Length: 336
Ligand code: ASP
Image 1 (cartoon, helix red, strand yellow):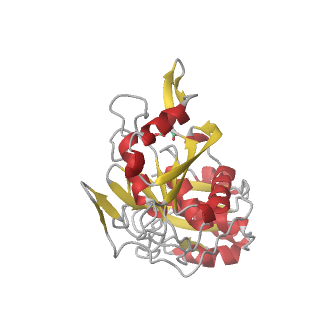
Image 2 (tube, helix red, strand yellow; image 1 turned 30 degrees about the vertical axis):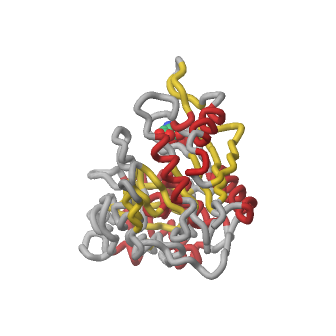
Image 3 (tube, protein in one colour; image 1 turned 90 degrees about the vertical axis):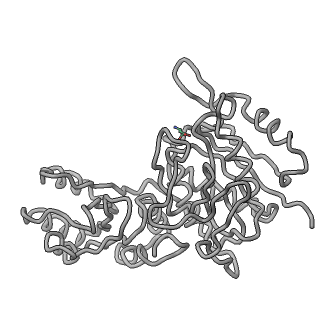
């Protein structure tokens, strides 16, 4: 069997950073450090080609246009590779992985996103482990989806969230089983992986800066704050509700404002502030009025998946009504 050929795309992040007087920033000669590391293992690793962005970023600066560039770069090189590894900052990795999953629909090869908590060139770095594991998984015939590989876990990209800023286990998928646990050998969880689709159906629309805003309910939130946010006429608002999708109802002004915003074409999606569990609007009387106000429950989707899916659906040119319907229809394993 011929050796698999993996495309490794470096976009930035801690993995390629070094300490400067201003704090961590992308190091100038990261590509040579990376090539040396991968070269040490010779034929034991899959064959790979390195594509380094010449403007690596801290992923806190990533925008929907960066997701789009990456999606299009993978699509353009898709035929030349058996899989991809994307090196990315951890802060918005879950957003990028989610967005990639919506762009690369029908994916038939692995796209493994990884990075590190400690730079590759620093002592006690987790970068080499993450990178080499990602490279091996990107050569697997069993994986045909966008996944995050981090500290011995393989996670569905559009179910992932960054759960720790200090532990090496930076990511988890609170509402979905891990796709693999990687000990001495990777143990794939076959029943959790997406089946390989018959054909690719990539959707690479132009992403714009559609105003999609979060609104997190907090005890005693002043209604004028909600009013000010809705006055911006956002394309969508992700309501971060309590528990199973509950919102305060003692002041009728909230539901009135939400109903008005919906009628004006703002898509309102309800998520839970809890890490685990599904939104069921109407479980409690407080919050039951949200359905009538046009709010769509985002079920067990991660915040990152809801946010990037909304961007994707708007970029495809769907109307608000179509977005409301499409939001909770499963595309690539993001919703149960
Ligand atoms: N701020 C960094 C980034 O997201 C953090 C990291 O990579 O761990 O690019």
